[in-house]
Amino acid sequence: MRPFRTPLPPSRLPHVGTTIFTLMSALATEHGAVNLGQGFPDFEGDPALLDAVHQAMTDGLNQYPPMAGVPALREAVAAKIEAQYGKRYDAGSEITVTAGATQAILTAILAIVGPGDEVIVLEPNYDSYAPNIELAGGSVVRVPLLAGSFRPDFVRIAAAITPRTRAILVNSPHNPSATIWRAADFDQLAEILRPTDALLISDEVYEHMVFDGERHASASAHPELAARAFVMSSFGKTFHVTGWKIGTVAAPAPLSAEFRKVHQFNVFTVNTPMQHGLARYLANPAPYLDLPAFYQRKRDLFRDGLAGTRFKLLPSEGSYFQVVDYSAISALGETDFCRWLTSEIGVAAIPLSAFYADGRNQGLARFCFAKQDATLRSALQRLARL
Ligand SMILES: Cc1ncc(COP(=O)(O)O)c(C=O)c1O
Image (cartoon, rainbow, N blue to C red; front, side, top):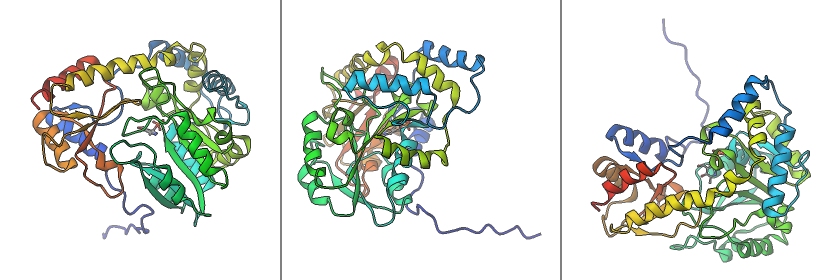
């Protein structure tokens, strides 16, 4: 019998293939390399958090929660944002629990972007932004961060605004460059957006990883911007449980209402026991207040270890990434260099080109230092040859 035919519609995302993260992780496994490529911790979350979730399950909290999230968690998040950034969101109408920040970003984009709309993204950026905008039928308008410093280029951002600009997407602390936005940066953005109806999508998943005594500048702390912003956060990042895929979005009630229309028919809601566990765990702020010191120590261990190599270290102001310039070591393109580093030196990294649409080569690679000290030391031992 002839096999039945599988009709294949035109791809909605014809340019999307297997990501470099998957490729590098596979290569790392193949060569027994230390994987400092993909951004996730190789250590466990706090047992107190795991216990709280387990308790919720054994308490029978296992059925559908309300669409926007468990009220106790939304209350806890509203209180946390107020304590951190001085902005009071209404837990009932302005905080929504999502299946991670990635879903929150897609949902926000589907809620506000349609054919003919433009969305500004700053390059380099997290790889879901552009496909999200394309899925919504919008046009991606790419504005590069300043070469070398990776700071926002407000002249070019202002020049990119048109009557069709629906939103701008920003990310601080920034993946992959590990730079942060400061309050003055948000002031400049506010000035540019003031005469427009453009919305702000602020990806703040690394909000609790800001170093050297700086404080995270959140869009929610900027009243003018908060009035037009979706602000995304990720419990997965903050509490070392990236596989839980749970986060939140905070936005003014009318924007949250539009968000929830899409959310309702997308995931509808997010798993119940994790929400209850997180609600209880958030009663103690110490775990996230201690996070900057926790990651700063790892950053310094990693940077100190690389100081004797020919890698040039770019600043790491926030997030759990460290970008290095390897041009004194090799003339290879970034992808080839990272392949070589993985297979020959035994440490996996991600080429910065993976975060640009044009895959440009600048001689830069990104390491993730969200790893046990022993993992970092083992990577440093291998990298010491360079
Ligand atoms: C900038 C940025 N945004 C969002 C995410 C995803 O967050 P979540 O795991 O909560 O979906 C990541 C994860 O790497 C990220 O780097």
